[in-house]
Amino acid sequence: MDVSGKVAFVTGGASGIGFGIAGALAARGAKIMLADIDAAQLEKAAARLSATTDVGTVICDVGDEQAVRAAAAATIEKFGKVHIVVNNAGVGAGGRAGEVAIEDWRWIVDINLMGVVYGVEIFTPLIKSHGEGGYFINTASMAGHVSSPAMAPYHATKFAVVGYSEALKDDLIQDGIGISVLCPAWVRTHIYKSHLSSPTGKSGLGVARDESTLSAMQQVVENGITPELVGEWTADCVEVDRFYIFTHPSMLQYIDDRHSEIRADYAACAADERLAAEPDALPIPT
Image (tube, rainbow, N blue to C red; front, side, top):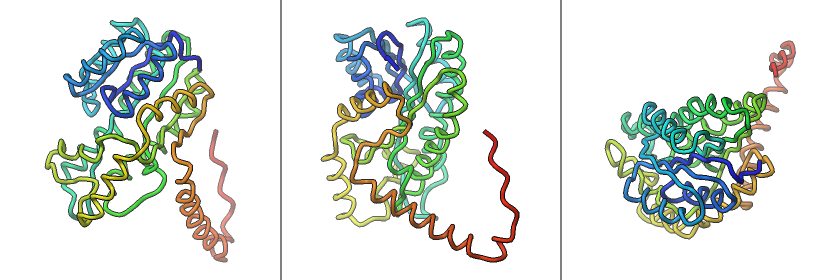
């Protein structure tokens, strides 16, 4: 996709990866509608981008369907149409099984998963309406491909975004709409603090871990790659229609390890005479 002259709607756009992507798209000629829940930070971000392109802002809690609908309407009112939707806003929550508050589960699912769903369901008809094609960028994480202890709520939502995006790929292409799923590892953002805004304020990414481990996690995040680099790479990948957008080559070993476990257990299934005698599964319709 040539992003020049296109209109991009970016959630979580006031800071971090969202602002990094917005800046990269703006530098390539896109007009930007920044959406965020932080009004003060939103205005600062818009001021920074206004020297580069035409920028609009809208306060939006992506976990609230009506707020996303209002943000979509504000985008159309401002720019007349929308081509690119960056479903980026996200939060972190963790903890061990039996120790995570149900209200914190609902909170992270509403934002990390339903926020993406609302973005796709609400904006797809708007993109289709002008017939010029479009693009979705759904922010997941490497945590949507590999898992670790005490982070089940985060992994659950990020695995869901990856699977959801994979399922959408063939649906959207029929309407001239592309899609990428962004799966970064360590990026210099404040997501490890986002649990402080959860209903209980307790289900942090480091909950149930010792203090030294939590400190190490914070250090890794703060020494991660910059959101600006993630934004540039994301824009590069969108221009060549790359579906999976990864940011850390060193993480491939963990994906390989997971796939090795899957293949080993599948081999056990294939070797069992009772299962091998079953008729071949019907092909999945495409």
